[in-house]
Amino acid sequence: MISEYNEIWENPDYYSGVSTYLKEIPEEKKTIFVLIENEYNDRIFWNKLFTSIPSKYNFRIDTHKYTGSTALIQLAKNGKLNACRVICIDSDYKYLLDDDIIKNKFVFHTYTHSIENHFCFGKNLHYYCEQVSTLSVDDYFFDFESFLSNYSKIVYDTFVCLFCRCSLLDDCKCFDAKRNYQYLYFSPIITNLLTEYEKKIKNIRDKYKSESKKYDEINRYSKDFIGTLSDTIIRKFKEKHKYIRLCNLCNETFKNEAKLTLEGKGVTNNNLYLFVRGHTLYDNGIKQLIKLIIKLLENIKVSQIFNQCQHKTFKENRSEFYNHYNSYKPHNVIFPQGLNQECEFVENIRNDIRMLYIPKVMISYSHKDKSDANRLAIDLQQNNIDIKLDDKDMLVGESIHQWVEKNLTECDYILVLLSHDSIESSWVKEEINAARMREKESNKSILLSVMLNGITSKDLPLLLKDKNAVSLCSKYEDALKSILRSIREYEQRSHINNA
Image 1 (tube, helix red, strand yellow):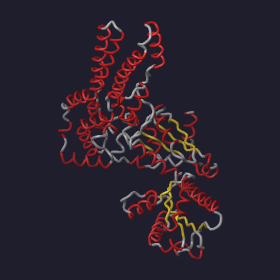
Image 2 (image 1 turned 90 degrees about the vertical axis):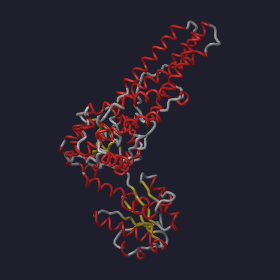
Image 3 (image 1 turned 135 degrees about the vertical axis):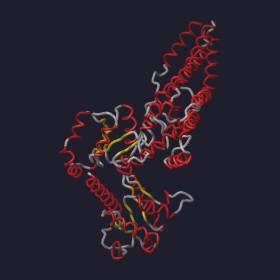
Image 4 (image 1 turned 180 degrees about the vertical axis):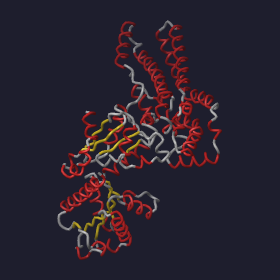
């Protein structure tokens, strides 16, 4: 599959023939080729995101013959990307440092440092441990979100200092130097705690002859251990981290400016763990933490299974215990490879995909024509069009002017509903003027005119006299098909121009 895929990407005829491809292949059968950095984790992550977007396209996800982001970024720099050929990469620090590559609309990125940071999202780890152990983590007092928030607070100043250096030098090598990311490690702390726990469990097994007493003690000690685990790790990590002097080498003014910049990107001292080096966070902390928590929950679960069997005779007890235990089979997987719970930055990625593949249409209308606007909005949404309608999308307290201005700028098309009331509306007039200005600047068709009952082409405003308009006066279904066909044709022309 990979060799076949790379032949497509590296064949010069494919690039020169993309316009023909877009014109000749039926809409419902068009394939968007998506290249990812690596095979397993990347495929799971990106496949879930692309398939969650309602689109008429088929997204084919594959790896490049050279793994990693370098080869993919080179494709972007060489101008070999378009709406039919896109790449997906880890942001690393490109999002935070405003690297030009992530401004390319054919390049999708993780926003967080890497995919591993998404997998380390607190709610995702919580969900994973519960699925693996079949126990509620909440019942045993380990709060992943609180733990990762406290972890973020400890490393925050050091990260800000490194961010200052990278910004001043316009180079992210400061982040990637090994001596500069060792501050993220907390795996030695987990290793020591795991050794301490296993030693204690062994002592309990050696001390008690009674199976019942043995499992009661293991259950009690495991619950106590997991109950204090988060505070213990944070206390030890904070003690270790105080010897790191990097944050003392930065000018306070630069640090404050860096904090404001990071805050503008959505980075705070509570969620910083999403932006530190993801592979390091996983390999030198989270992986070991998950192992330890799974072991604790496993021992608690096994103790519960034993207690459920105590009413039986000794022989029946042992037999039922092992039947229960074998059916339980704690998973050996130590890291969540899925994305069952999502951090807030996942929606940013979806929005980027929607912007490229799902047309965004703002409906301009008089509120006296609300029923027509709502009906059109519902039917267009069912045909994979992203509709912006003030009555449904505007938040309570939001500025009307700002909402209208934002959507007039960001939406791909403005669908204006023309009635005797809307033609006289100052709001609709302003929206038509703005849309016509955009058309003049972009040399693209943006404004789509829809005539409602009682309106004919003679009644159209002067700015719309030269534009073909569709009428809802006769057959609604035919008018809807005409609007959809027009949007898809304009989208196709746009993709061809970007090829």
